[in-house]
Amino acid sequence: MINTIDKLLQLMDVLHDKDALEQLVEELYTDDAFFEDPLVRADGLRAIQKMWRSFGAMCSEFHARIQRQLVEDNAVVVEWEMQSKARMWPISVTIPVVSWLEINGQGKIVSHKDYWDVMTAMRRLLPVAKPVEKLLPGALGRGR
Image (cartoon, rainbow, N blue to C red; front, side):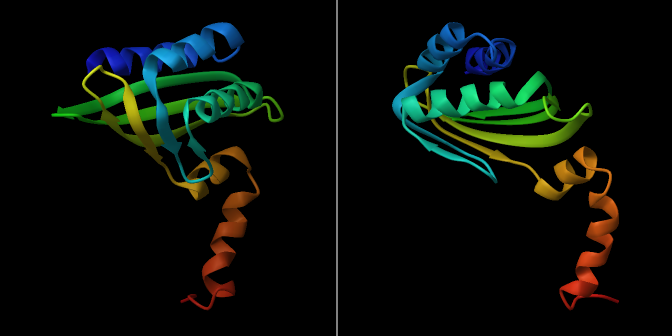
């Protein structure tokens, strides 16, 4: 299962190489796997390949650093620190991510769920997001 994590790290290195990306996704995920995070859901191998290609198109740089990982039976939980630089912004953003992976007997990913906070990403990506976030509790009737 640790090999699966190593391959996920490799995936981030080949985001801009379509052929290598598609081959590695085929090695990592089952045909009927799904990926889900706060913004995206991809059902099936082809949709997951498309999702990773889109991610590569949006990011000029992408790196991940594993904080810790837990492996038990067919489940892997990985706490990452993801750093990316979007093509449209000259800002590099680092956000904490937790991935929950279910792995089959052949070592392939059946389900991949990423958990991360959208507001944290927005605050770090857009300097204007922090002042707007401070206004939200009052605007939503939850102010002090």
